[in-house]
Image 1: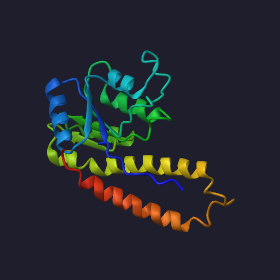
Image 2: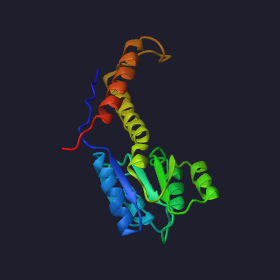
Image 3: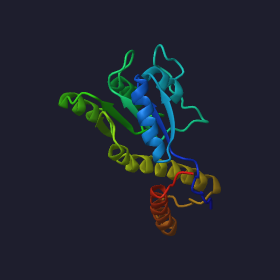
Image 4: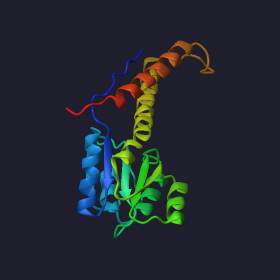
Length: 196
């Protein structure tokens, strides 16, 4: 039976904005919550960072094994590739589609906001982004972290031969209860992360 320890690595947020001032602001706000932040100035650089192999044709997505991104927050209006286009590329990718994406914009245009939310954005923030906005990201980050932990646990259980049940439903009730409890503990601990 594999035991997964709670990672001490801070959650990783990819911040995308062509404005240097806005990029520094969002980076500073995210770091106050002890998130690890990578900031880039375009959607294309964001896709490259996420492991896009063929930037010109937007074809082959394969996430970098050494880089794990827990959330992407992007400006809507950027030259070259908008935040909406970045959102769509992420959601179209089998390997990236589960990464939560948040869009930010200075423009309060309801049709734009609705379109982004319909395409899979978790949130749409109006600039300037505030501390209360960043606080709204916690559920998406903890949900994404738990999903990764569940996947690791599943791999660990498969490799140890712990699932001998043909129907997969019986005999694992104790493991399921423990897993739910572990998830709650992780959630509670992620809310208590203090800056170093």
